[in-house]
Amino acid sequence: MKKLTVILTLFVLGITFLNAYEVKTNTGSNVLYYNTNYGVNGFDVQHAKHGIFWPRNSSDHYQLGAGIAFGAKIFNIDGSYYSTVSQAFNSMTARAQFVPGSNEIDATKYVCINPEIIYPLYLSSDYNLYGTRNDYTEPIWPLWKNNSSPFGDYVTTTAARSLTYYPDGPRFMASESMVSIYKDSDPDIYAFSSNNQGTPLNLQVEEKTLFWDESPLNDVVLVIYTITNMSDTDYKDATFAKLFDIDIASYTTDLKDRAQIYSDASKRMVYCWTDLADGPDGYMALSLVLSPQVDSDGYPIENDSYNSYSNGLNLASAFNFNIGNNLDTRLTYEALTSNTKTMNSVPNDQRVVLASESFNLKPGQTVSFGVAQIFGNAVVNDTDVKASGQEAELSEILYKWNALYNKIYVDQLKINTTITSSSNSTQDNTIYPNPTTGIVNINLPNNELQNLTVYDIYGKQVHQSQNNSKSINLENLADGVYYLQIQEGNKISTHKVVLNK
Picture (tube, one colour):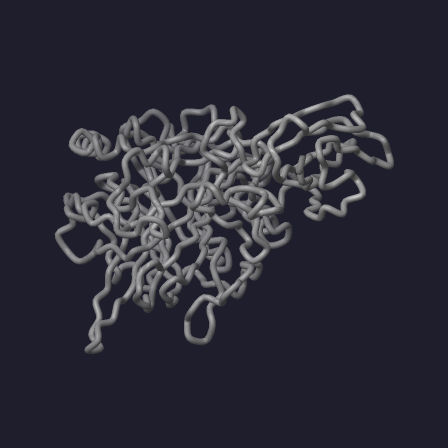
């Protein structure tokens, strides 16, 4: 039976479960990407169809779904141990073993009611500079700047998502991003598993999926996973992995997926293509581009800035497997830690797994990994050709891999759509008096004020004026702290003002 038919059948059985969650697509980038708020990536859950198309407006799809796996050893008091894997995506059933939510808030609860409202999939293009939705409805953007956290803080308490607690503002990454939080603490989700592979590990995962509009990164998707051990147990010889169900075709029921490990191990890369005569001519590369540094005991270095590629964990295992008769295609700990780097070259319906080198993780400790999907045409001597698996055809892929490397490790994922300058002191010569009883004067040396916007501490816009206003009247607002955003030419600055009538 064809795989898609099997999945559709299984979805009929599990449709109530799946309908509880969200699926969204990005609005920009050259890659059309479906995503969820519970760990299933690149899959159109609502229609049980492919979830990655490249180029965006084409019929060329490259994937039917993906998700992470986390394996670890857990030791007993007597010195014995058992190994287990917590897996976010079963490539045969399309079932997820993670649910939306935060262990920090509700570690012992089952999946909450209406998780798409409480723990939605956030899409940055729905939000303004201050983290509120463009239509000023809930929810507030969850990711906020923290100098000690290179990817920002996921703020689980909505009341703390404000400039009062995070004066540097929200953390936006890339041209567009999707952010979600999910966990594996709901035992009902694991009830169908007949073996120990799949025991919940009490993990909390913050997922950030990044897209770019500018070339060449508009052909790249980067997903950053920040994983926290929320249990009271050390996880030994742990490994992070991502499972991809690659499906590379164009309007076809046949699948002849191919995958191969790139010979340059420093790229931590696998490249995939199809043998179909009428299939896409491009490649999809999968790469572990971001990983933590660990100390001599194997634990992640605290406050690691993730700015050293060479010192991070390498790709330890990379393998593929074909569809089989066994519907329980769960990944085993032994497979993830096999240190196998081989690909079955037979064209078939392939799954591809990338697994990191092992590490340890203490209770409460956090670790981050980043996995990229890079799309490019097969090119030889500046001429597009049909993808055949020859590494000489990967020049476009490698160019984009290097561009992503520079974006991560040179530019530090910095972007311009943030607050460019901020003053939290009431001793601010630009605005006076401060505190104020109502009238605030604006002092700009270049006299180029174009727009003045006032936000409350929750990021909601409460006032706006234009045309070189030299003062603003806040008397109709309640006493409290407000933030004045001043646009002066191409410069945007933010100033804190206290209203005390």
